[in-house]
Image: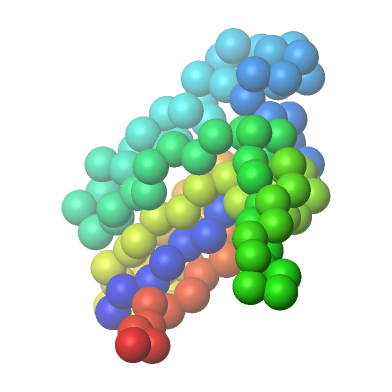
Length: 119
């Protein structure tokens, strides 16, 4: 089965922020190592790196025309930090991969959704 992991950033400081830079280099290196290890799993296809939420543009359509607003659709704590696609035998196996994502233990969350086709 194919599952999509949606990674929510949560309360951990955003990369590049003064708060993030204040964390010990060893802690930041461990987080990056965890992400690198996940990306090496044969059953995981990571999405491209997402930029920071403050650089996002949100689009809605009103009266047939696009309306844009600067910033993310969700607040920074709820902002999507990334996504990955996991091939797994079942939900339990997908949970095992999701539990390795650093944001799952750093104040964020990982949402798992079965992949589906609607068209």
